Amino acid sequence: MRTLKIALAAAAATLCFAGAAQAQDDGSPSFSFNLGAATDYVYRGFSQTDQDPQISGGVDVTAGIFYAGAWASNVDFLDSTDAEFDLYAGITPTLGNVSFDFGVIYYGYIDKGASDYDFWEFSASASAPFGPVTLGATIAYSPNFFGAADDAIYYEANASMDIPETKFSISAALGRQEQDGGLDYTTWNVGLGYALTDNVSFDVRYHDTNVSKANDPAGYGDGRVVASIALSW
Image (tube, rainbow, N blue to C red; front, side):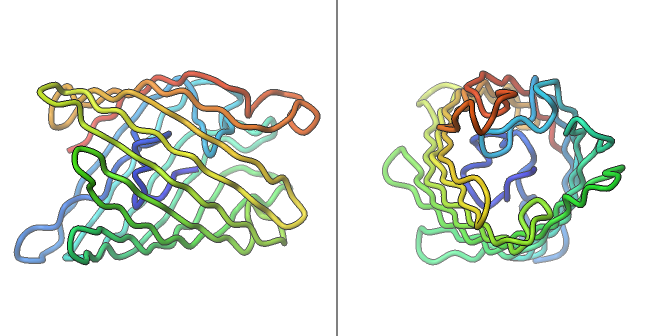
């Protein structure tokens, strides 16, 4: 699933997804578009494509501190489900040098057959620069995570830094997923990004979790390296 653009987590994991477009100075709506490809689609440490490649794309619109958008990707849950679409909206106020993001996202799935994976999630994030490093934190709540009847909550701390006088950046995130009646686990990732141009970027990232083989016999939460490319305009 697409992480909320709020987090520097965007830099972590599917960050290659698209960030929110910057609004024009006069507050009128501004649109941006994105396309991406990756060797795997990892969401909070777990492969969403049966460890196969991902193709994704989306559109964002911003006006002042408000944003909304849509994004879609292929998925593979070993059933008839073959696509995910996300619809989201939120606000991005600032206070001093702290940037906030308060958003809501709907995760929908296509051709899901008898399984109902669709769910809502609400999030709040904050980030701020500390010297050359930007630090951030996110909390997200879902009343029906992955279609389950139980509540779920996700916490994350993240950091990113541009490498001076280069087009490279490094970023990392540490998260905790907890669900009533479900699997609780810790996930983390660290990666290296490269901005080829203002519109084309690459990312190579290592993802892992502390999930045991007993709870994940297929190894979808095992450690793995994911390479991705993102195009935005």
